[in-house]
Length: 297
Ligand SMILES: [Zn+2]
Image (cartoon, rainbow, N blue to C red):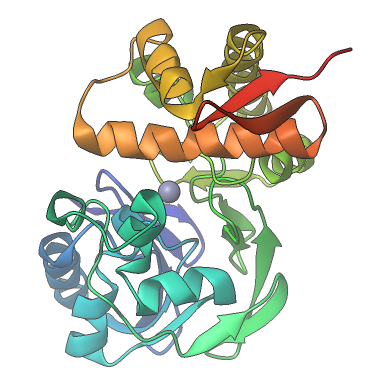
């Protein structure tokens, strides 16, 4: 684990989920996301202290536990302010909301784990896309919804773009060819927007500094389209959501375990919302089962 330099005052710590670091002239720093857990955060904190850096703020791209899992640790240790969009803030302040949404009720205990439920933290600044000042420097918050409802990226004063989970690297797509999503329509628009981005440096939350981002956008769009086609072909005859989830897991050779099932099922719901809300499919009950079918042309 080390502090990787990108440009000017912008760095990142390369964990499984990276932590961006922007260093201010007074030897304080802003973190972009906080790592997957208190244990990761503690290691990152040790590294930062060895460089005489004090954490004054965290900017969260979104609420997922692998991005906000260190919030609580840093808030306790360095009393830092946390910045996030309001929808994501609700999940970080009430961390049971994550598993609650996945389960649609008070969740079974197996879902109350550190992968799905980070320790709660207090979000001091509810932000919107556009310019924000942190410690008297200007950062640009970029609206990139889809992966989560109010997912955002951030551009540091060095023009380094942290894209959060809006894009998955080719390396990670090779290992796991699936995109988690909360809103397909929004994510399609986000990918369209990312196609035209031209920042000299882009840092992915999983993968670090990336080149050839335009190609990554194209490949992410292909995966989205592939999942959509898989579902459209399958619901030519009526199917329940559970049947669709099982079909997608099998066809895409995805891992068969409880955590993944719940996350994939959430993504399938997002696809079904997209298909129904754009009138490409319809939802109805049949013999006491909720079914989806492709609309008649
Ligand atoms: Zn995420």
